[in-house]
Length: 369
Image 1 (cartoon, rainbow, N blue to C red):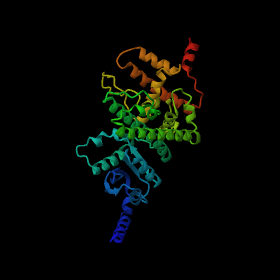
Image 2: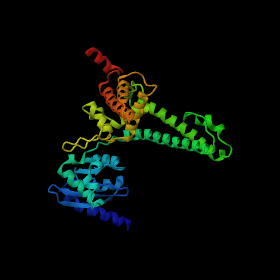
Image 3: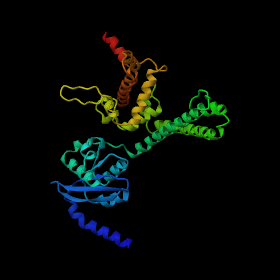
Image 4: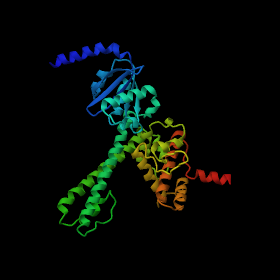
C-alpha cells in the first residue's frame, strides 16, 4: 500500500510539471508540522495550492525540479533553514518581516491558506512591501547559538541565586554578599540547617552552571581567535567584552550591509520610533526592533562605560552630559544614547580597520577651537 502511494505521488507530480511552468510566484505560510503554499501565475491566477510537510524532504519533493520561482515566506522558527534550502534549489527567496505585514496578521479571515495566498500576491505586486529580511548563514547561526545558550544559562543561574537568597531571607537569615562565580564557596556554610537539605542541591547546581558559563566563555574566545579575528578590533573599546564583540559580528555578519555606520542604530532598535501625522510630532520610546539580545548587550556595555569603572572617553562624556540635564529617566536615556553611539562606533571600527581613539571627538573640538 505504501509503495503504491509513493508511486501515485510521483505520477501526479509528473502530470503537474507542465502547469508549474506557468507559475511565477509562490507564497508559503510556514507551520511547525505542515506548511501551506499558494502558487500563482504572472496574471495573478491561482495555479496550485496545498500543503507540504515542514521537512527538508517534503520541500525538496514539492519545490525541487520545478524551475526557478520567486518564493515568499515569513520570518519564524523554520524560515532560516527553509530559505537556505529553497535557495539551493534555484529559487529566489524573499523572507518577509512578519511584524510589518499587518494585512496578514490583522486579517479577519486569517488562515494558513489565506496567509500563503497573501504572501504570494504581495510578492508579485511589490517585494518592497514585504520589508525583506536577510537571514545569517548556517555557520553564523550555529556560532550565535553558543552565545544565546550562554545567555540562557546566565539567566537560569540568576533565578536560582535569587531563589536561594529569598528562601533564606524568609527565615530571618541573610546570606553574605558574593559574586555569582563564587556563590557556592561563600554562602554554603551560611545556609540554615532547616533548609540545607533542599537548598544545597540548588547551590551545587549553581556551581555547575558557573563551570558551563566559563566553558562557553573559553569557546567564544577561541572563535574570536580562530574564526572571527575582526572582533579583536571591537575589543579596543573599554567596556566591550568578547561576548558583545562576537555577538555584534555574528548578528550583522557583513559590515557592507550598511553603507553608513549610523544605520546600525535603527537596525538594532536603539532610535526613537516615529508616528508623525500632520503637525503632530509625538516623542516616542525606542523602537526595539531588530535583535533584542544584541541590544541588551550594548546597553549593558553602556552602563559599564557610564559607571564607576568606565574610563574617560567620548562615549562617557556624552552620556554624563545627557544625564546631567536631569529630568525623568535621564540616566536611562543616557545609557540608551551611549549604546546607540557605541553600535555606530563598533561598525566604524569594523569597516574602517582604524585604531580606536577614546577621545577623538574631544581632540577635534579642541583643534576647531
